[in-house]
Amino acid sequence: ARRLPLLAAGGYTPEFEWAEDYDLWLRTARLGKFHNLPEPLTAYRIHAQAGKHTRLKLSLRDVIRLKIHATRSYGYPMTPRLALNIALHCALLPLPASTIVWLFKHVMGIKMHAPRD
Image (cartoon, rainbow, N blue to C red; front, side, top):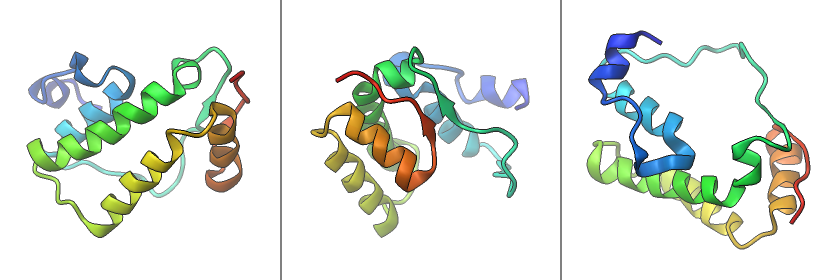
């Protein structure tokens, strides 16, 4: 990423502690061109000590809050697909972390190690 657009977007903020990268991407994307490359350049892997892993439900909660916030404050439209995505994320919250990890691994193909519930 280019430094100036990240600074123009306001950099990291404490509002979405467990989804701060996603928040910064959403704010930066409003400023101009933002591309999602068709081929993966990295593999998304979460190890047992990563914050995304140890604080899985906090991260999930912040992602839900951020998606709703983005429609209200950042000007992103609440499409049927986004509403379904938020609803599915909400459905994950009451599940044990190990079940969420299993779903991510087997449905989404994300490499994660099972946490202790």
